[in-house]
Amino acid sequence: MKVADGMTTNVVTLNSTATAAEAAKKMQSENVGTVLVLDGGSLKGLVTDRQIVTKVVAAGKDPAKVTVNEFMTKDPVTVSSEKDIHEAGRIMGEQGYRRVPVVGDGKLLGIISIADLAKHAMSCEPCMEDILREVKKAER
Image (cartoon, helix red, strand yellow):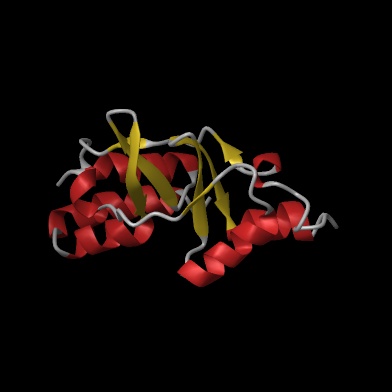
């Protein structure tokens, strides 16, 4: 199965000039924990709810003044939509990520998560052991 067949295509995005408060509000309204940061249609970064808490709020910074560009994960690791879904699992396991943006032809196409891998694993018993082994690496 290819990454394109298991990814989520409805991604939530922001511009890098958005504030941490705007990112948090967008996460709340869209019921997501990650937003992808685009500038000019190009993927520049990734922001998680955890980053807002640890790098902005807990650091005593004003979420209404701090832009996502100041604390986002810049140039995040991506996976090609044409790769086997196991490649996404390998990347997540090795890098300790729960979500990886999916690209194709230089454009953002979606995002794949551990939950997406789990859905695939449930329909592919031989795959289950491999995927769980890779995800377990992320627990380190």
